[in-house]
Image (cartoon, rainbow, N blue to C red; front, side, top):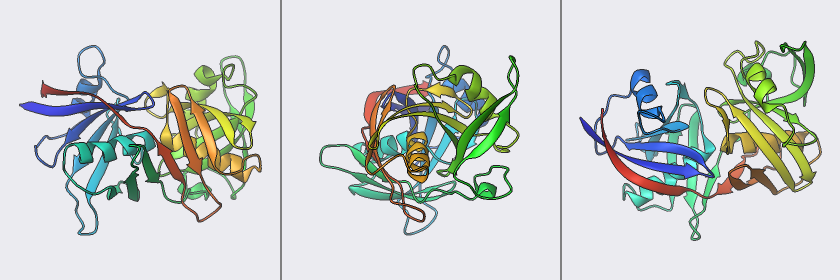
Length: 280
């Protein structure tokens, strides 16, 4: 079966996008792994699926699969690409669309300058809902990490942006131990659903550097939900004012959050790389 797809990226976080409004494909973990192989398939960090809505007040259903075949709840960079895709493909004429994700609704707004603003919803801070194992809610948590060179204790914030995140503040993202602490914390027992791990360097009260080790993917050069979680963590810890420019290896995002119960607003670019067809 020949399937049409679009390759896109948000700050280098790359996606394969499938329109399942006008074509039919049975998406399985095996197929996702095959398509995600960078040598034998298309290759991507995540596969984004556009599906018809199941409710009348929703424009589309938005599904996300990691390269390893696992379905995840949210992806901010993907959401911006999703908005550009449905407009470019004329699946909608709206400049503001509402999508249904595995974790609730999101509103996507395309600006005249082609940047996309995403209302990511309010962050989830209660440990049981992140999910993160802790006796009570706190701004930061001490966590022991078993490493090959011995146990290490780190302090992190545990936040969900529809997907779980652990955020550490580091002196320098360039020298941060992303390769060792990233996978150790991603799969730590206190994150029962695993987690994305962010390493944030505070440059000023309105500017940070960030690297993210993504659950099921590894380090990527941009993570939208990771940028949101990092700014929430910085605001909670009293080191950031709004708005915040987040410098990721792939480029910059602008994040704004004004406290508990308020939505996180993320604004940034989305880019189409090429159109293609592949037999599945």
